[in-house]
Length: 281
Image (cartoon, rainbow, N blue to C red):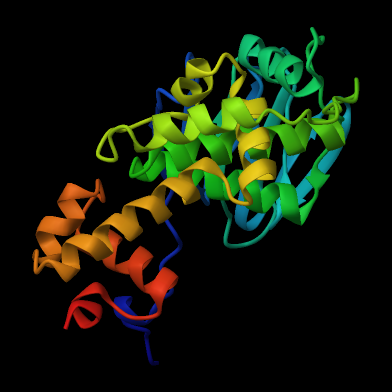
């Protein structure tokens, strides 16, 4: 009788989870996880729980119903609501989860609405919205990488603003933008004052007396690109000048505030079609 060797047997995936924090989301945790055997007992959070499913599917009991959240879904849980969680597919599920505080969510809802707003309670059951899910997942990855706080906070603010504008029970709608060329120019000046500085969106907004959401929206609408993209383009334009003068690619990358040479090369090639070394040659 033939027996299969241990190496021929399929090895089930292992649970792996990383709980971490970011200064861009104060008083909150974030989770990057892959679960196969995990079964969450009934529990609740003081904060919101916003898990974004990346692969597989999760099932969970919430407010008397069995919910299924697959890829591209958001298994949003309101504060204080008892829920469970386990795999809904043979291979389990992976997700990226935010646990923003009630205060942070309410402050963002007020910023988006341009006036005081109540706590933005989310609907019961999984939210199936590929666009919102993709934006939330991208923001989570940027925050975890820690490479560009301006881009990460912009992505975080934009993604949650979209979530609230579409799904908050007390609908949160942004008012019409008012032209403000002076503030836009002041933001540009702040962005280029020190291109090596790690500059959060909240600091940029505070410099011109605006909320982060409104500042990013005003800048993007007026200039045609978000603040982090405009700042990177300014870095690249100044990098060209240094490359013409014969400065090495490594020195240029550091001088213009890129995290490393590969980061600089990737952005340079996307903007100008060739790597900086080739462009210099």
